[in-house]
Length: 423
Ligand code: AMP
Ligand code: GLY
Image (cartoon, rainbow, N blue to C red; front, top):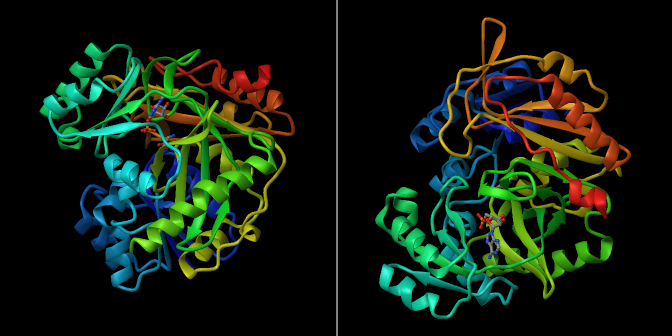
């Protein structure tokens, strides 16, 4: 069969890599893809910001399955458009994707469903923010309501800073229209957990959990990024906690969306804070996480295609997945300056020898290939991912591979999974 993956990052490289192992796939396409993906799938041009461009591609290819990587295409309604034409596609509809595309929608939905989340206020003006801040203590979190590619959340140390950030968001200067409405939120403390489930609109099956490292610097310093690395182990959550998260968070979300007429199919990414008061929802994503997908899929031993089809066809069960007990870790190598402004087009050296380190797979995020050489073409450039029976070994292998890779300005965190190793 013919499968199309939409997207161009490390997540999409991991999806392509895993789907290629499926014996039933004869033709694998990725649009637009990147330099590394082009080695494993046929890359085709598309403008993922334009629904008509994606539909045109679908018309041309008529894939038996389309897998959507990034959120924007989902928020634009790519699933609605493909489904209307009878083209099988994995992911939620535009209405269901509001769980990610509107933080105010998600917060009000969580409240209606009595699912634990941080206290919040939804504000449409500077006056409303000033008034709301009276009910919060610093530090306080300010979030743009709409999609902001990881740049829409600021943890403000003081109310003055929160006021300034909110004003800048509301003015449109910071994240454009995404900030026309903001959510002011209580700052939660604890370990973060990325808990993803597969849903068919009714049933859910958990994937193995992972932990992302969102801040740019070691020890969680500096600004938020799209994610600088992630790991997954067999004991990152125990069976009891996993069942609790399914019963008290994932299932109620899927049931609530169905009851409200916006059936949720696809992957539901629950971004959680494990607080002293118990797990609380920080955010939802309506897609696979990046970089979490890289270590998660490294641990998947069963056919990914079967699982994605189960979601579309309404037969999701725990049996959709068989997981390895191994640990896996992904270290993101980024361009100098990221998450701020950065230069691109730097030649990348050492990829081949890095890929030869035992248990390592180097996923490409922002790369392009020219005359047999790879160049940087984005903020997050590579996701150096390793698997091993012990987390310590996986971490050692990932960093051994990172040390073999170089490009002008390259930087990466040296402490991915360090806290888990200390425990
Ligand atoms: P979000 O896009 O909502 O996931 O936010 C991005 C990151 O900001 C999260 O992964 C957390 O690290 C942080 N964050 C978001 N909301 C909160 C909160 N209420 N308290 C503390 N940190 C938060
Ligand atoms: N790693 C966080 C995200 O995918 O949004």
